[in-house]
Figure (spheres, rainbow, N blue to C red):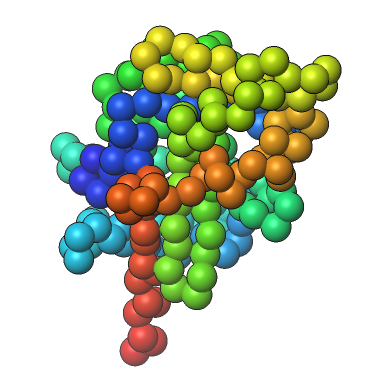
Length: 196
């Protein structure tokens, strides 16, 4: 997500959180995403990200190209989440294949988002917060558990139900803006052009 999104990569810092699976069997398309969005950072806007009604997205890349993918996700406990494959995360974050190399096979990246009128915020999971709870290291049967991978990368394991319960119970903490303001990407919807 370099310049293209003024960078989701800036949200990941030097670590990432992967999940063994999404907590739902079927992903969906949020119609509220349709439109054109400009990333906001330090008072600047980035190139527009275009999302169609079927949630296909045209994402500008640093080299001037466009990456096309689908923004699928789910709703859980009143919060909305995106789900990305490691390959999509690499492209969206301009991560030079780092995400795919770090991610366990068949894992996913989950990002939480909220749309308020014509603004949106996107949060990636915080590895430190994902590892913080003691129970995550020695969970009771049926609970999700966090495994420290290389460096500060974290992998959340568990069934769909266990991951859903984790997100319900600790989603606000895991997907939170850091005190220094990092950890959130802000976007502004571009107003539709006035009809001639």
